[in-house]
Length: 149
Image (cartoon, rainbow, N blue to C red; front, side, top):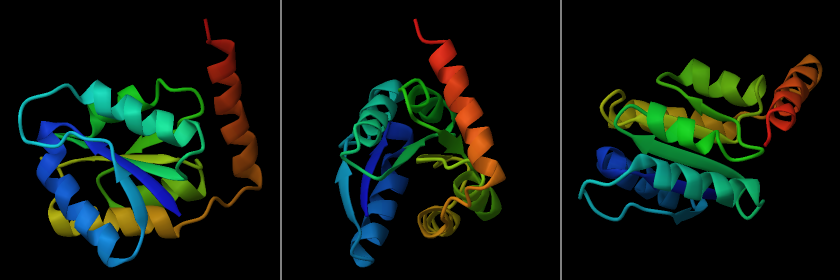
């Protein structure tokens, strides 16, 4: 499994913790920035991670900002991305199992380090269930296609 990860300045510290965790588990990843706590714009990093996943260069993505909301919204603008903003383990599991989310987002100002690592593990360990959920994910894709300009 290969992951793309990115954050703005509001998620920088938590991203460092997540990357250390991924390294300890031997999970391959690429850091798309930001590379400091200097103020920057979350859409840049949400888009970079989402494009890496959308192009199939990476299997899944992780995006982090202050709340997880803005960077996830940006990631969701990339075709084929289903980015879920979560703040609990159950939602992380369901985002994969039922929604086939390919990017997870959370906020450094919302979740602590321990919970963030549990969220990451749940997201990475959960598989899409398919079945009736496939039809629903396909409907999401149809909405995306219909609204392309």
